[in-house]
Length: 338
Image 1 (spheres, rainbow, N blue to C red):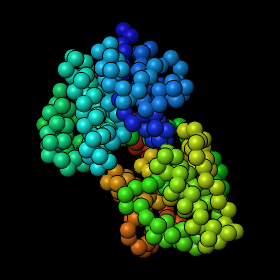
Image 2 (cartoon, rainbow, N blue to C red):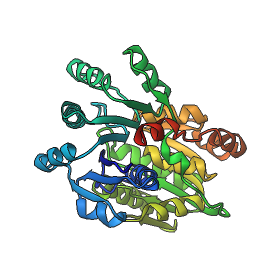
Image 3 (cartoon, one colour):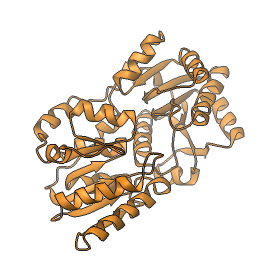
Image 4 (cartoon, rainbow, N blue to C red):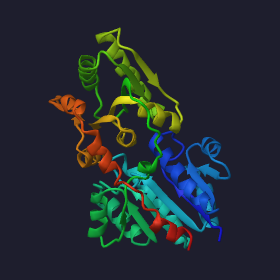
């Protein structure tokens, strides 16, 4: 039976990780012939990426109302939608969409999300009580799973769906891939210290600097390139922006090293056999780095021996852990097809 699904997430902002997750969901739903409407900040962009889907603007509530009423099921996720670290307003928006679907009697699926942190007591109250009414919940980390369990809510603990990305094995090139983004604790001191360390450690390698979401990343990436050039004009650098998901994955897969800030840049490094270091700006990045035992540097802390650990990284050990990350679709498929 063909059903109509509406998808709510951080879509249309041209952020690699969220767009990659959207691709995974769309492919799975279309495999079973279901109809799809995506709530997107840029519906034209979203429609251009896929065949046979529709899209309405995330912020046009009349359209959101209309599509939910016409749907059979709302899928919220993946990513980290239900947290107030980014903003309390953002949390309320995604909860409001879930609330609308529930009051109109629609099934709601929470897909591979990282839940929390939610510091606002009212935000926690709303999240807890709305999630109790969702038909199926899956989370991507143990802390989210344990949080829901403490609320009396059953969920499936899965890996991030981007772990299911198919990777072609490439011979590694003498390249250090660097992925940066702006954040409230990002500062010139960190950029200068990171540039100094990378120039010292990797002066013989090309630096490829990646903006995953130009509105947030690009200026920081350009500032980092300037800092590198001031230290050593002879270091080869390039700043990449506006790349497709597949271009990002292919380029990073060819690199020898990755120093990544965004969660999904780190996942791409891990699954493609690149020696990877994480920049800690968010608890999800810290948890991922700890799980795979890769070096982690902080925005406000001095570097210690992280670069030495990066060079000595055991790729076979990491690959063995990556191979355990098989995304389990069975719970999701059971709900969407019944």
